[in-house]
Length: 313
Image (cartoon, rainbow, N blue to C red):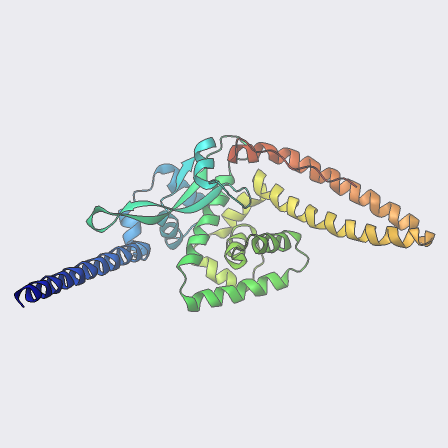
């Protein structure tokens, strides 16, 4: 009996120890989760007073017309400039599937409770000295800031913003750039409302009044940013690339149908077909020229970048 009592006491002690360990783990997990949440949800005033923005980061906020709320949102990501292989290693990780861009937002390390590492969202921006593309840092900073805005929205506000994004998309059915952005995000299984939220705020004018009011929370003068986007070498070329890709696809489909009709004996379509071929070739030549100009930019993002085969008719 004594032996059984001893074993029972030992088992009871183990049970208490296991329960204590479980409680510690749960409390620790809650503490880390709470710490991350508190860091992400710190007040704008706290962020602005505690984060000492490096001059090059402060300039991003000033030159793009950000409000204090916009600055605080950008500063939450503590932007870092990277070049070449360092940028590629951070933003184009092994197995990367997506589109080359001059910035990204990723989870980075920070110290949590008990000195344990926890994740913190960090913004990384490509550093370019080339005068043709140097201003891309401004549109990139605003674009990534608006991604942070979107990710911090609660469910009610996110639904409201998503509805506005959908209405803005519907308002622009002929905008090939928007069509391409939506298709690309769906293909990559990413949230296209999140992407279009950044796109509309960074490069588009004449928005729905309610959507413009939303952006006014983060920009005192959004026109300053739009002027930069108009002249900035990479952004305007990327928009034109998307437009041309859509236009060439549509023309190719029409030409395929028309050729079938001509082969079936409808020779009256030959002049129209030839004119359409000429239009296709003109647009294809423009696309090749822009793609050639963008190779330099893409190589800043990925030094090992190889251009895809060019389209021709």
